[in-house]
Length: 435
Image (cartoon, rainbow, N blue to C red; front, side, top):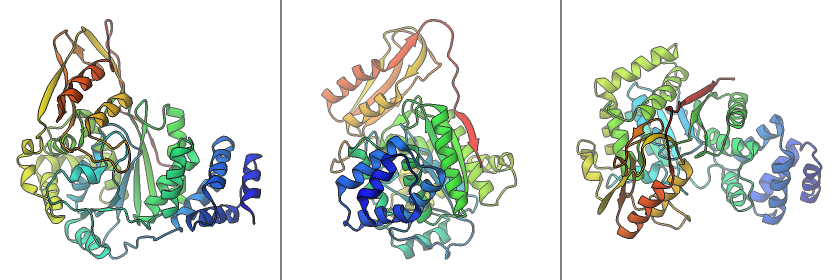
């Protein structure tokens, strides 16, 4: 079998066999097939696409390229959640302890962020001492004892995906549905969960810019999950503006704490209750989504969800006392108000640009080697649909560099669209894909 023939076959729009897909994935993982040939194949896939069978075979080839986490020692149905990413996406820190507070095991592998803001690992490191470096035995022990653990993704979990994603990132082949679906699902399947809830973002701040593309991706991933015996549901949610109000690591931790207390932003709370309800149903703890939602709301109101967050942070070495004093997490040197110069309804907040502004403040990484400043970011005060007057505070910039902070103020003003006329409507949940 020759890589040249596989490239030519896909370039001409023909279907690759399972053996051909296994050949190129294994060869690229072990270094026997060079970057330039895989780059050519990725571009051929980008233009000629893959069918559902090819996508499923690519997913499993990446799963089998490294370790597959065996979670059989964990009691109960293990539930995982994945978001396709966005700006101000704080859901994992809310959902993990909230679902675990019902006795459902949440065993999650997570990564560091590259881009707008940090990943879940970076955010949780706002708690001094918090560690994601758990051995497999400690990971399993924590889930059995506390019903929740988050660990850093090991280097040998779907290593083919890691190599292929790095290559896609520099060859303009990231946004292909088959390549996105196989990348996400290979990691989820290798991580060993029994049930997976997917939060598929759509809008300006997401990979998928329109509903049709998001729905196609969601269906593809749900089908992959079900074909390999994982209960899988996908929720299509809005990312045309940032989720919640906080954008930045410690700021998002504080917002997660507020949400677990029942005082969080309404959009973040609604999305978490929707995603969490499906996690509860897939885990067999409720028969219907409505019943599951009632259970989750009850544990927010009685404090069990917040207590579980404290227990989880403490179990992984973090200072859980900060959960009772979240203002101590916020130690940026400058807090600069962003004042509206216009009057009218907010028609749009350019989510992706806002994420990049936060990154320039230091909240995210432009390169893998960059260091994140956990204390900086943006807190929105007004969002799409709100009426503002000239002089109202639209947001606050948290910065440790005055020049960067002042620049962020002007940049943020340029990414708010304010207009006279009628209020604009907005939708948070567009669809639920169960098959």
